[in-house]
Length: 230
Image 1 (cartoon, helix red, strand yellow):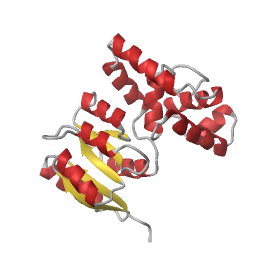
Image 2 (cartoon, helix red, strand yellow):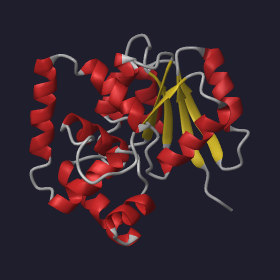
Image 3 (cartoon, rainbow, N blue to C red):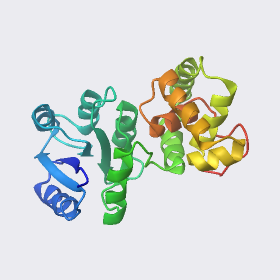
Image 4 (tube, one colour):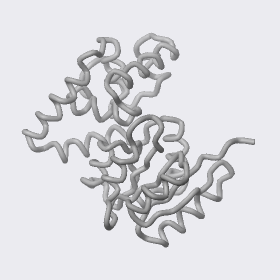
């Protein structure tokens, strides 16, 4: 029997949580392990139960989704967090991604898209489209001082990255999958996976979403070998 993906629901609206529960539990491979109405409740819940994926509202009373994500996300052992918001360009959602969330979705996303996102982040894949990441970064790094600060920090994290790993990072930021990167750079998929693993370790990035953020902050998304446009 396939092991269930354990999902926790964090949203201050009970009806929203009820809808998510019905959707999640309609799937044979998913199970809801708990619910919380705000960040403080979520921290208590997740100290008692193990969850693989958290559906996290960002705008909540007492403790919002950004700070809750920051406290839950560090390290590989923490749950993968999908940020849910009403607005496409939401500063809370962007802050939550930088705090460690693995996905960004609108609350009106189609049910199949939400289910696919749960399975994708559980598998370690990115869910935030590079085009969405670009718009978020363009919007919230419009301040030249903030942009320079982000670029400087990003470059310091890239100091140990090789030229080939940098090429792989550029293509990740453009939305290419491992097989597509392998074809683009004339490498085997196994070699690409090795490069991705080294990128994650060297830059202290949790998953591909955070590699995408890093590439955009470093100004790499428009450089390197030609690939699919974001």
